[in-house]
Image (cartoon, rainbow, N blue to C red; front, side, top):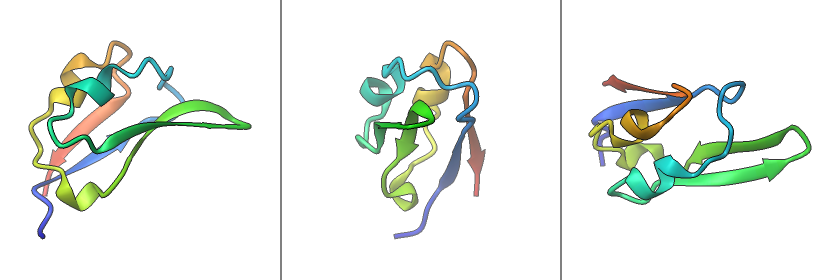
Length: 68
């Protein structure tokens, strides 16, 4: 499978609100909790279709979608 887009999450801005999780039509985003805090992560980034839904709902502007 060829990725249509790349998603970049700025982990210094992500607040772990989970809005991007429900916005992703491919269910590729998850929240990860570690010693550094809570942040969103992309599972299987090669499956991203580049719709931009995650970036649109991110209230802190932590997500950027780039066309490949």
